[in-house]
Amino acid sequence: MAKKLLEMHSITKEFPGVKALDNVNITVNEGEIHAVVGENGAGKSTLMNVLSGVHPYGSYSGDIYFDGQLCRFHSIKDSERLGIVIIHQELALVPYLSIGENMFLGNERRRRRGVVDWNETYQKAEEYLKVVGLEENPRTLVKDISVGKQQLVEIAKALAKDVRLLILDEPTSSLNEGDSLKVLNLLLTLKRERGITSILISHKLNEVAYCADRITILRDGSTVETLDKHKDGVTEERIIRGMVGREMTERYPHRPHTIRSEVALEVQDWTVYHELYTERKVVDNVSFKLHKGEVAGIYGLMGSGRTELALSIFGRAYGSRISGTLIKDGQVLELNSVPEAINAGLTYVTEDRKDNGLILGNSIMHNITLPRMDFVAPKGRIDRDLERQTANHYREALDIKAPSVEQLVNNLSGGNQQKVLLAKWIYSKPDILILDEPTRGVDVGAKYEIYQIINDLAKQGKAILLISSELPEILGMCDRIYVMDSGRIIAEFPQSEATQEGIMNCIMQQSKGEIGA
Image (cartoon, rainbow, N blue to C red; front, side):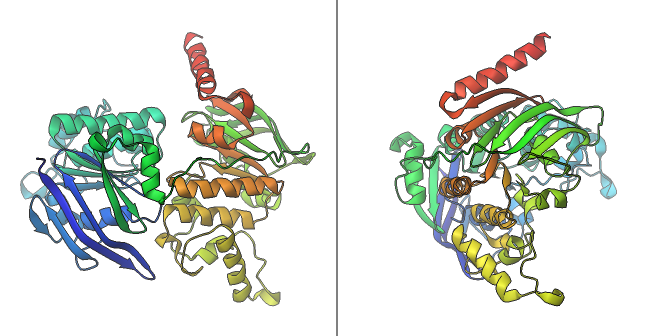
């Protein structure tokens, strides 16, 4: 019989106006990968924050047993002393410190009198980097390595703390498929070769099915069930049924034909150079059209130039030495700033809602009404009632789950934060919406609701450019698909002719051509 490493009994945690956890129970066996899944707002991250001491003892009710001992953690340091290490969705690395400095930050290797032993620091860092499959010099600055490698550095950092229970909160949300697979295979290797137990929180159910031994499902802050992959014949459909409480017969709502003949936006010969390394071309002579009522997709692997293209179109928010022509409704546009782009009817919904999209410390109301000042009365007085009425309209229209529009955005689930971000830009009354990874870090139920919002906007005649790393999402939602690689558009597919194999084959053939050139 497997040894129980972790037991959490009757965990209840409340925030103002919200019961985030309601009598949650979970048991994790030693040496297993245990997934925790649920819709946004189900309480997954809150449960892990309770376990790791981010929410200290006394701020919740219930008991935590680790290795048979009752634990009352007052800080994250307390849990780390026992070998419980959490890696949050937003990586906690300092860009301008080296890999080695980051790995031992707060856990420094010291000589007598407290002086840091840098030789031991970098030697140990190199050893742990090899364990996670990285060959980087530990003196390399973190900012100079890819996001996928940064995720592996976080795991190496956990190993340096003698980790016994590794908690990963959405570790692959910002990674491409190749880097995601490396992280998952590393978890399997650490389990097999070092006996390290992991708790994996992920919305990517294919990843959960790939590597998890058991899966605990949370719904509305309560434990629904725990499934054993080796006994219960777990499928993605079975997990979804537990998460949402019903069968989901289709992942994507029906796409009605809403495309109009009028061209909303035409981009001609668009070229952009890197902001800092101004000799490096990141968008190379790109041209495309976007019709009113159309959802057009841009798909490409990480580094293909998708986001750089979108941001440079949006009032030159990114890039240097930008050239090319933008034509909206038949008129040439000269957009030299973000305010000019917004006034011209363009919006850009960022892939990074927490850092660049929302003001987390402000209310839902203030975030939604930020782009327009329609509620400012004569003489500059703000009409709070009208502002609240406007925010409530969008809260209801987009089904943002919160007790009121006065709720701080920071206290919302990821899916509801994403809806606030969409509401904010819909309120700006755009003609053209550029959506960059609009469902990143969002569960299947909230994804479906966002897809319905996109379809409704297209039905109104809005033109939508959808950028996504998820190929099934692109195929399920887009009328037409552009494929990007190395800053260029290399192919265009109508929905009727697009397949995963065809799109990936285009990218692979392009890569082979560049290598052979």
